[in-house]
Amino acid sequence: MYSKLKDFVFGEETPGHLPERVQENIARQQQESEKLIGWVQFALVATFSTLYALSPKTGGQAMFQPVPWAISLYFLFTLTRLAAAYKNYLPGWLLIWSVIMDMSLLMFLIWSFHIQYEQPASFYLKAPTLMYVFIFIAVRALRFEPRYILWAGLAAVVGWSTMVGYVLIADPNDPMITRNYVDYLTSNAVLIGAEVDKMLSIIAVTLVLCVAVLRAQRIMNKAVIDSTAAKDLSRFVSREVADRITSADHAIEPGDGESRVGSVVFTDIEGFSTVSEKLSPQDLAQMLNEYFEATSKIIDAYGGVITQFQGDLMLITFNAVTRDDNHAVNAMNTAVGIRDLCATHIFSHGATLPTRCGINTGDIVIGAIGSKDRLSFTVHGDQVNVAARLEQLNKQYGSYILAAENTVNACDGAFDFVQAGEVTVRGRETPTKIYTVQGARAEIKISANSTNPQPASSVVT
Image 1 (tube, rainbow, N blue to C red):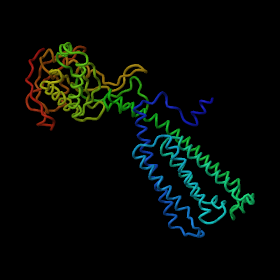
Image 2 (image 1 turned 135 degrees about the vertical axis):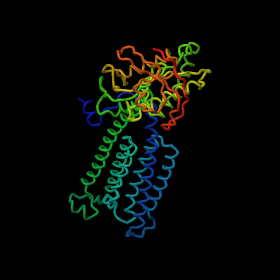
Image 3 (image 1 turned 90 degrees about the vertical axis):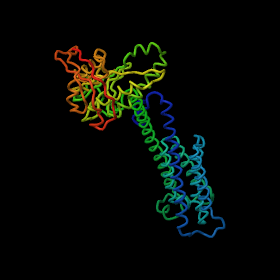
Image 4 (image 1 turned 180 degrees about the vertical axis):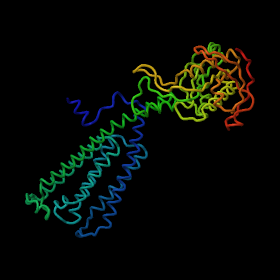
């Protein structure tokens, strides 16, 4: 019961421990907030100074004028703290003393009015400057830490109760207490109930702000964790897939997906097993990281999305996660770019990594497959299987790029294709015409990066 009530009032606590990097990010934001608080308080002291300078001086001619001194002290204190905020030297204990000092200086300013204007001590209890107490409390909410709001409210209540107590003992012969509300408003008499109301109002505002900030803080922590998780997720899947998952209107369920016409590229490194046998796991990981880094730049340049990694294999999709009306041409340019890069680029440990590509275009399904508790967001369908088979057939044909007839038709003359043969892909009954690329470079016709022509592969049926 208590736990439910606490969650209802303060909001649900953040589950688990905030990661250190999240705490560091929040701490940086809090430091920036403290700078903002410093500038707000600087604006307040500037307002105090301006109002005092412009207001008519109707007080007596006392030798000592305390108000200018109080304003000057607060001005120096505000500048000092603002400088400390920019140097990031405001530890918690110093901030607490800073909050107490804020209220002390404000109370000293209000207290000094009866001396400035040569009136009984009760005179300052009617000063509208008390309203600035609420501003000082509210300003602490900019930091998103309830404890400083509590300290500000506590300092204000203690300060005002001290001010009321001083009035009651300032003249033992005449405490000036009244029970008449009209006398209170029209004289320097003190109405205890009115002063209690002021302190209750300070307490109420403090508690409401604390609850609001605590609830907002917990929501913010959850949002930061979700944002960090989404950012981390985009390192394990493509940014486009991560955005699709995190921005979905409802939780992704197994089978959720949509069908659309797109292009698929399967890539695989030629002779990778031989290369991996000669390297330690650490060296192999380093080389693969370089390979994926280099090929990802080409894929990104043509709007492709790496939907899946599996060892040295990549599944790249076009017009699946993001819209791409020129998906077939972009898929071909990606394959040609990867082929040419990997044929000549020397990766770590002196290795070249010639890469085979299979490309197909047609109806594909993009969505989640798996169980309720463990999902994989990928593309699937018959056309995807064909692209995978074509990548494998490169070994048989001695080629590095094989494209299905659907892709050739969709490219609409952007490349010079040569039919390599007609095969019945395993799992299908209908023969599939397959093509290699040679002749004119794609850039001449579609303004893409240059590619080197590849000799036609021999026809094998």
